[in-house]
Amino acid sequence: MIITSLLDTDLYKFTMMQVVLHQFPGAQVEYRFKCRNPGVQLAPYVNEIRAEIRSLCSLRFQDAELAYLSSLRFIKSDFVDFLSLFHLNEKCVTVQALSNGEIDITIRGPWLHTILFEIPVLAIVNEVYFRNTQPVPDFPEGRRRLDAKIALLQQPGLEQLKIADYGTRRRFSRAWHEEVLRVLCARLGRPGASAESEGQFAGTSNVLYAMKLGVRPLGTLAHEYLQACQSLGPRLRDSQIFGFESWAREYRGDLGIALSDVYGMSAFLRDFDLYFCKLFDGARHDSGDPFEWGERLLAHYRANRIDPLTKTLIFSDGLTVPRTIELFQRFHGRCQLAFGIGTNLTNDLGDAPDHVPLQIVIKMTRCNGQPVAKLSDTPGKSMCDDEKYLAYLRQVFEIAAPAAQT
Image (cartoon, rainbow, N blue to C red; front, side, top):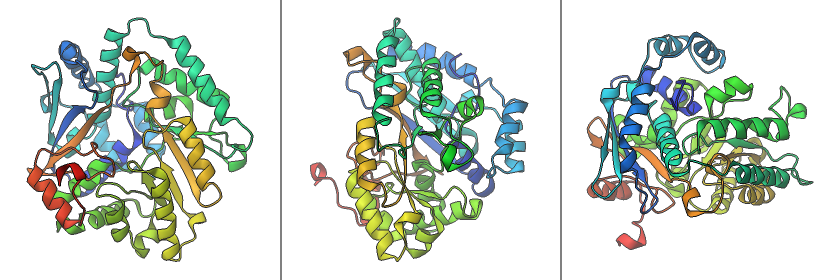
């Protein structure tokens, strides 16, 4: 089995799932898979992918795993009780080979019972693909590259630069992911009880490895949560505000990082008023130019008479270590900073064509029968099969259409 524990996923799946249990238990959703790499043939591996998903659906949460979740201050006892009875239902997932060699994966069902599919299914697709296309992986090159990244981070003047692992969904394999995390813990230091004792490794989004390695689990919310609010909220124009308020109602000031790119930065800043500036601890960047985003957010805080030094900017969009260092040097001393590095940590074994990481995603496309979407600051990151809805969404949030579509 590729996935051996239901904790082998990102923390924000559990934090969002708890909100769904308490506030939207009846929501029905649909997710669709997309591979952004041109020419990648996944169809030959459909049967293996189906078999791994079948094994995933046989898993249950173990007592030790539930105890670990209970130890997290923001996880509530009734949610843990629900998880003790939970399992994923294979009937909610269809995996089909397409005539062009690609695959279609569709997930449909109650949001509460399908939200945990995304991350392990993506990890399954990755590992099935790479174990077939790279039967003899170049792990020595991967270790050399990891050593070089650590050496860059350990340069003088970067002692306060802290990175986190966000690489579960696009990792080369489960075993390689664990090796990378153990090296990071050993070489960059585990997160400590105090700032003085901390190393440069801040933690991981992966809950299983946070538990196994004794590091911090990290994460708040993802795009699907704010997308679903397009259907669940009282009015489309207020869906982003509704999402932030519903989140605050659940966590009462905890997990206070807002996601800024569901409707683009301009629409985010229009909604992220003084109230939300004070209520949330900061925001996360996940599309568009990160330097421009950071400058705009800091200016927004200053315009609202908020000291940026009290707020956290999290960068997580396709980061490499050199880009992370550039961002740290630009914003260090002006605000609090955090960096989540994904694919570049967990799937970097060389530059040969067969080593290219898969750019695969699973995105929510419908909620309660209605289309939902994000209007990313990066062209190509949006997923929606209803062009009329996308046009309406742009109109409502005052977002210009991309140049190619005008």
